[in-house]
Image: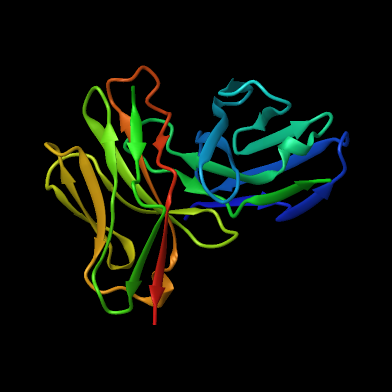
Amino acid sequence: SQTIHQWPATLVQPVGSPLSLECTVEGTSNPNLYWYRQAAGRGLQLLFYSVGIGQISSEVPQNLSASRPQDRQFILSSKKLLLSDSGFYLCAWSVLVDRGSSPLHFGNGTRLTVT
Amino acid sequence: AQSVAQPEDQVNVAEGNPLTVKCTYSVSGNPYLFWYVQYPNRGLQFLLKYITGDNLVKGSYGFEAEFNKSQTSFHLKKPSALVSDSALYFCAVRDLNAGNNRKLIWGLGTSLAVNP
């Protein structure tokens, strides 16, 4: 069966420090991969998605970047964190080849607090 | 414009009573519709989806949802609520006529509280 791992679960970082959040998927090949941010426990904002190694689409211009160095690895990074980067970050995957009927499968998230 | 509305920020029901969490959508073409649940400090879990076929869709944990094309609604229901159903529920839609069908349009979520 497929599983998705996200770490760390919580992170407290000072303003101006770098960030690296990692997500890996097991049990499937060539997944679509996504990074979402959830602010204040509510609305989901799509940050990045990827359909293959090295292929990243950015939905919102911001202080963050994403990379996909391997098929089932997705990394969210920042060179210098801002206070506004605080939030709950969720990684997700879905089947690549479909017409959009495949649901997303989410990791357990990383709660980032920038101080 | 594509959109999803969950008109209730919070729904309160007594344990054992039926529950409904509402969702309406606006897309230009045929929709794929999804419901997800989120427990505190966890990721979202997929509950059920409507793609085509029967308007009544059954999903995980005894939940079901009814697709109503004329009312552009996809309300989530459960005949008998449990305290453990207390969570945040999200409705999402994909517009098949949109160029990028990888992008889901999300509602803002409805917090369900089931009281013992």
